[in-house]
Structure formats: C-alpha cells, structure tokens
Image (cartoon, rainbow, N blue to C red; front, side, top):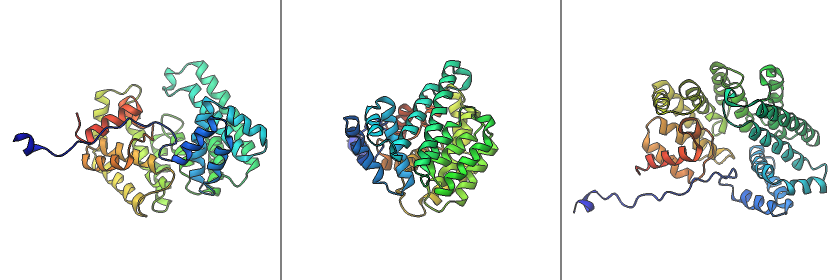
Length: 334
C-alpha cells in the first residue's frame, strides 16, 4: 500500500559519463574513428563539411587534434600526401597545443615542476609557429588564430599586447567566435595573467555585444566559475570550499546575471551552435551550485551523458565525478 502511495514511477537510468571531446557530434566521431584506422580523408571531409561555420569547424579540428596527440600516424600521412593542405596544417598546430597542455598538466603553478613548464613552453612555441604556417595557407580562416592565442599562455605575463592583436585577428574573421573568447576570458582571469575585474569586464562586454543565441552570451557564467574557484576552492577542492562556492552562486546578484545570460542565450530558440553542449554543461553546473534542482534536472535531460567542460573539476575534484554526482542530485538518486 505505502509503496503504491509514494511511488513516483521509474527512476532515471544513470548512464556512464561520456568524456569524448567529439561530444554529440556523431559525424565527427565516425570520421575520427576512420582516421585512426588510416582513412585520413574521412577527417578531411568532416572538417570541410562544416563549411564557413567557423565554430563547428574549429570544434571538429580540436577533437581531431586530441586523437592525433595520442596517435598521429593518420595526420602525418595526410600532411605527407598534401603538404600545403590548410586544414591538415591547422590540425597539426592544434595537436601541438594539445600536447603542450598535457605537458604542463592542470595543477597550479606552485605544484607544477620546472620540467613540466619547460615542456609547456617548448611545445607552445611549436604550436604558435605551426599556427602561423596554417594562417599563411588560409588567411581567411579564424581557427588557426585560436591556437596562436592558447600558445601565449606560456609566458603570458609579457604578452598582453600580442594577445590582444591576435584576438583582434580572430574577431575580424568571426566576430563572436566562442573558442577564441573563451581563451581570452581564461587569459585575463586571475589564475593566469589578469584579474577578476579584467576577466568579468571582457566576459560581460562580449556577452552584451553579441547577438541573442550566441554562445559567448554565456561567458559571464564561466567567469563566475573562475571567480568562485579562485576565491573559495583554489587547489584541491574541499567540502568547506564547495559550501562557500554554493553560497556565492546563491547571491541575488549572481542569480540575476545567470538568468540574464540564459535568457539571451535562449532568445533565438533552442541553441544549435557548435558550443551548445559546453554551454549546457555550464548551465547545469550553475544551477547545481545555485541549488536550483528542477532547472538542473531539465538541463541534464538536454545534455544526456556528454561531459563538455572541465569546470566540473573546479568544485568536485574531477569532471566525471562532478557531472555524475550532480546528475544524481538533480534526479534525486542517492
């Protein structure tokens, strides 16, 4: 009797967290797998299929570069077959940037060895040079400039002017490119080479200038993650730090900005741009930190299993753990 009275129906079935950088782009997944099996033309075709959708083109190239950083034989074959192919050149630059990131690791500078920093600097310099070569092959393409931006995270304290010039080059080609502006907000945050004020100023100015529906309208939400992590949960996440982050996100002024960002992002209809899954992950995380369970559940329902942002690890010690523990909370599963 009581079981029948209080039964709310079957509970959602938890799926494994999907950390594949291709996310929900199944054409990309198929092409990447074919490339790893030796068919580099499949990688070429899936990038070219994006056309002048620069964000989708860049996201596909970035995911392919993650694969190439692990096994680059297919990319080597492509570059050997067509030495001046601008797409192959750009993926090579992105591959070097990925290897640079891996060489450094994700720990704070105080917990990073000299050898890691040297590797980061050397590979970043190679990525920048490769990016410039890709730019020369396709001057109209904004995507190689993004790897030039990320390469400046090595020694960035003296490179603010150079960074601004490269960002301007992206903007001339794709005014509100998501990946480029995410790099810019990251560059200007306090944990890298800026300050909280500089980070929020850039994020808010970009979001305000962008048209409804653009992914960059969600950048202030990302800036709040960076602020809360740096102020309350820096280094190894702790329960005390997480509680402070939750209290921060529940402040009325943070809630107002979150709602304003979401309203503008959704104003053009259901987002379909290439970074939409990243923005949905940001939204689910923000709702979870804000203790807004119903909105978090609805967002997780849209996301499915795709873990699309490292921001989960800012507060919960790991991307998959953060994603799944909050999915369980949103779905009232213990």
